[in-house]
Image (cartoon, rainbow, N blue to C red; front, side, top):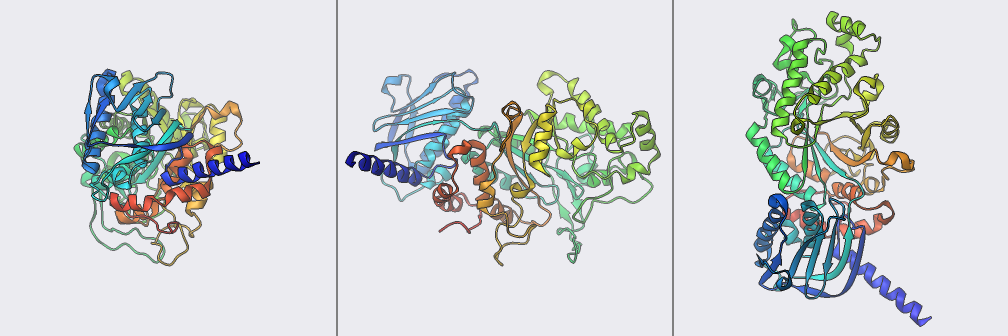
Amino acid sequence: MKKILLSLICLLSVSLFANEISLIPQPANVSVKEGNFVFLKKMRVYVPSYEGDSVQMVFKNFSKDFKKSTGVSLKKTKKETSAQIVFKLDGTLAAEGYRLSVTTDKITIIAAKPAGFFYALQTLKQLLPRCVMAGVPCDTEDTWEVPCVEIDDEPRFAWRGFMLDEGRHFYGKEEIKKIIDVMAAYKMNRFHWHLTEDQGWRIEIKKYPKLTEVGAWRNSKVLGWGEVKPDGIHYGGFYTKKDAQEVVAYAKERFIEIVPEVDIPGHSQAAVASYPEFLSCDPENKHEVWLWQGVSNDVINVANPLAVQFAKDVIDELTDIFPFGYIHLGGDECPTHKWERNSECQALLKEIGSENYRDLQINFYKQLKDYVATKPAAEQRKLIFWNEVLHGNTAPLGNDITIMAWIGADGAAKDAATRGMNTILSPQIPYYINRRQSKLESEPRSQGYGDETVERVYDYKPMNNIPAELQGKYLGVQANFWTEWVEEADVVQYLTFPRLAAVAEAGWTPQEKRSYSSFVDRLQAEAEYYRLRGVNYGKHVFK
């Protein structure tokens, strides 16, 4: 009986200590041992050679930040046996997986790919005071040490994403970098950049300069809705190609791929206002960048060959700016009213043998998909669409597209997977984290009723009760932030954090290892991290 009691006490001690180290996301397997590894002022590190030297890049960036925070110098050595910190390659591990072993005299990091080493180092940072995780100098510590642990870790899902809508409100590249920093700390790997809307076009396209000369600006900062009226303020902004490439380089160093979205043919009034002569269904009428919330009827005329060429040209320039695997073309909430009254669209619908105007949208996408397939392999991109495209005849698109499931997400994702399409879970409730997260009067103006709490976000179970034969089609999870009501970047941060940490854990940690009570305990350390990182956050779950 004494042995059983002693074992229970030991297990409880390990559990409490695991909570104290506050790892987010929770690793797949973690075991806390006795003792600590103490950093000397100068440490020797062995880093193996790797094609392209990207492992060296991971080490270089980490050592620079680590010295800035702690004053500890990490110097490479060619002799593994003389190193106190050892990087090792093991090709049997998952691409983003790693093993982290900390003993009293050595830290060993094992991974198959640079991303695995990067994520292991994010975990190592979390074992230290939060100033190290935040990458800022910390003068309160005389000795730097980490607990002895054995961690064997890899993500549950390959896609762990966050989307920010800048079509409606524009925040600038420095604010985007702040978000990317926090995403990287939580091992998220996709930043979905929603760059176009009815209310603004935010990315420079060299071939079509009016998209930013006209489409990036409107005559109101606030967007009208109900009793809220446009304010008449000249407002806008956009990213030059150089700006976007700077953000791309910043994200790549943090193993985050950027997924650019141009939402076409719906949600496109800013584009139509820029080039009404060939994008509009009624060019004889006045067109301006929209000042209101909701969904505009002013969609692109998909029957005009010049509009199709426009979309191809935009894809070309996005491909050049964003050297990653995906481009998102939108597809949600696209009204067909103007197509139904346009003779060119009526003729095209008859030509493709359909009576469903939604099929004009599918036909438009089919032309773009076929065009992408003609490009050199290095320039080809996989296309993502919101789940409304499932309402048309998707057969011409084939099943090699990805569906981002938001409305009726669980059912839509299963529908897409059953049709053989890859899918990403992004349920409007509760993963639209622009919505109010509490019922307090101090909560900033936004959508929702305050029901999308941290707990509700955390408790969503992705891929729940999905048959094994379909699970391979589920790429992962993504939180979305729409900005109709959010004019300022600090409000974006307030609503995003810490709810984004809950989504990050859903994407990384095995479902059976997830626990909201454990998460809240581990989350308490993040208040200091957010403060040091310089981002605002919701205070509701911090004690």
